[in-house]
Image (cartoon, rainbow, N blue to C red; front, top):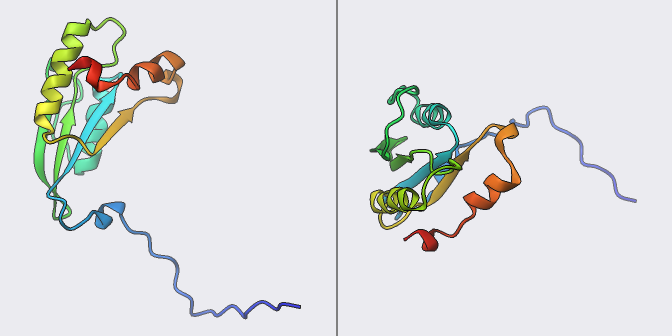
Length: 137
């Protein structure tokens, strides 16, 4: 029969830490591309990540915006895309935006952060988001 070890009152709670601390030390920077249906939502996430308001959530530009800086002493590149998931975007315009995003994130992004409200996540949007980038180059 197995008995449980006594619980000690001096146990310290588990300390949560940011996963950002676990980046390999040789990684020169973290490159994050924000995708989604809404400029204001992507911009709000951008501002949240940076911990301050850096861009206006109302005025959507027709090109990618890039922030290069430091976050907790690590280099980060944030790329906020125009609405690449819009159903009426032409394939030519989509190709231009994706190529520009690829250049801004050279040699390539580490993370694609899909910013959506739960009710906006449809099968069609899921299929579009998974479209191979190679077909757009």
